[in-house]
Length: 253
Length: 204
Image (cartoon, rainbow over all chains, first blue to last red; front, side, top):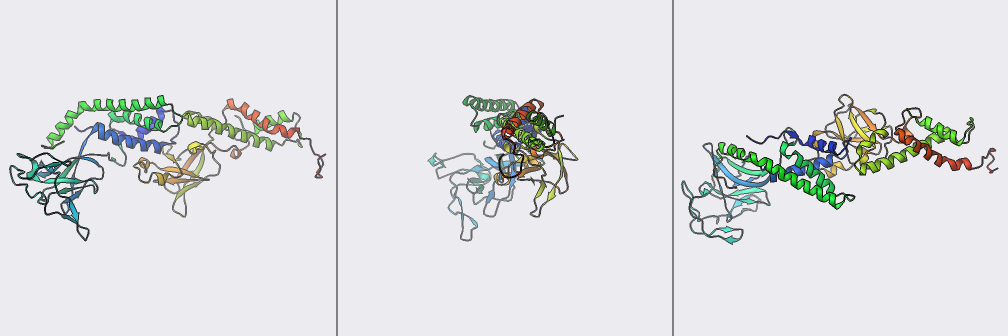
């Protein structure tokens, strides 16, 4: 069962203001802005809910990543109701741009990879990981389904030039929270952590605040986040089961 | 219930025990002094309260709600033309609350004058769908989903000058003595100046 988001962020901000003794809504926008930043951090560090969406692959074999994507976890093609993962290639040539501004795929990319049904062997080239040669990769891999590399500057994914676009491609990612019916929703477990985050950010820039109070606010936020992580961890297994039920297989995290 | 006139009369009686129609210190001067001293107390007290986050202390200084209707300007902006001046408190807290006449739970959020520019690329720019207002001089300019002709109640910490003489004078009872004392201090030097009874342009 997916984690439920059951309180509006707006109400969390108002709860915080009520607890602080505010009786008017002055400063609401400022606190709301802080709360959204806190929600983003919590979604990323605490909830870590995996989102997925289908990508629209262009003729140049590139696809824009979702606008709320913070970190990609993997890509897969959907075939016969089953996800088949794609392999992250560190040595894939980048997609260039021709004189008319259209994306082009380099011809010298990945020519030694043997692809096909069954086992994919990477035969002759050595694999380059973050600039370091780590040797050859042999054996089973996801390369038979295709490879990809991430173009961070363009916020897009680029597929190898033999990639077939006949099956829908999905990205699995950690993303920023999205609004539901025009409002951000907060998981009940994260509520106290968000209030602690607002308080810490509010204290951080107060010239009149003592160092002790600022340190306390920072520690409260840190503790609230850890507590939220602990509260979430008991549910994490059910999340995984949910993912498995959806035939989410062999995805590297 | 305390009124501006009652406090002004008290000040006048202390300064001029036997008040006559041609009393040197006019009741209107006393009212003005009372209003200015009250504004000064409100400003000092509420500014300190705002910075110390003691924001539940505003209640004693706010006036009764005034009714307004949202209008649409030639520039397409929605606004309300205020008929009273709010006190210049931090974060524009002089305009304390704005809510719908039909539905009091519809609160309009107070935002800063540069809200649009500062929140342009922020996820908080739509205030989660809530309408908002910013104080521009003597107008409230609205942001978000508002409709022309909507009735509003505006609650303000008004300038004492705009409070009617015999209407409710918003000052906590425990501060009335401070108001009277302040007004006396303000007007006492005037009483000590010798009276010039003949209007001939010469002190005599």
